[in-house]
Amino acid sequence: MSEKHLLLIGGGHAHVAVLADWIKHGAPARTTLITPSPRLRYSGMVPGWIAGEYARDEGLVDLAGLAQRAGVELVLDRCIGIDGDARRIETETSGPLDFDIASLDTGGVGRAGAILGQDPRLLDIRPINAFVAHLDDWMATNEVREKRIAVIGGGAGGVELAFGLRNSGSSDVCPGVTLVAGSEGLLPGFTGGVRTRVRAELAAQTIHLIESDAQLLDGHLQAGDHSLEPVDLIVAALGSAAPVNRAAIGVDCDLDGFIAVDRHQRSISHRNIFAAGDVAARQDRDVPHSGVHAVHTGPVLARNLRAALSGETPSQSYQPRPASLYLLSTGNGSAIASYGAFAAQGRWAAKLKRWIDKRWIGTYARLASGQ
Image (cartoon, rainbow, N blue to C red; front, top):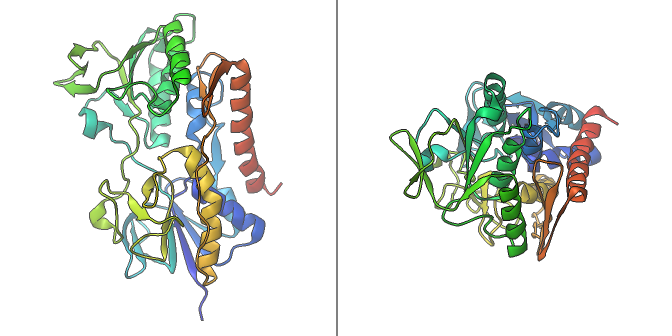
């Protein structure tokens, strides 16, 4: 019997954990990683880069190095279609690739254009690599401290980006930033204590908060009935859309186009296909599309893939904790901590966030380099 072939499609957080597991415990089968970039950018460090706390490329994971150490073939390409029945994918440039078992962790795509409308000033945070490249170019060619910036999205990502951009100026005169949280309000799902601290910090940094839905009408940015013009840059942090065309995917998806998976991250229609991160939607329970959950799903996915490749039935399931630790950087050397009902703010929280970020990056840097 020929050796089974595992195809890892996408270089997201969960697949980073799979590569780490293969390095530590050996690859259970011939494995190919197909991803468009040899490095993964950790989005949690991007607001810190904007605020000048990190170098631009400090938050990169060396996927190529991890793949080499794991004995995994790396193909720099994109998957554009999956035939689950034929066990084959189509790529942009490399032709078809066959597999016995496939796992998808491609990340999500932006939906700013679909929600807000089109505008040359609009910059979606997804995909994150393109966002960083475009924002870096924009900041290099503009006097940022003199510009007016609107951040659309009231979740944790939008809040951190607003603080980061507010502190991105090269002098005491920082850019004027407006945070448009939308009709769901500021930080839905967080406790009142966290929201109170964030509101107070937004006010202290003179970041204008609007809790109405934004839209682009005839080249003008509006929130509710009010114009937000003039605006030089519109940064959209509106969550993730499904990154694949449902018509090109031969597996069952939910109503939003995300691959429907069971508690073991396995497709409900094709038992030899797994999915994790922003491309997947658990059908047994709600797991938000968040980097926190993707990171914790990774080791579970690795164990289930190892079982499936050995002919065993996957049995592991990621169970989100009752509460997760969130550390929201305020861009000025402080951070707001949230854990369940607990909420606090201080420089100690920013130091803890930097320690966690650098430890996570450092773990994979040491694995990639063989240390």
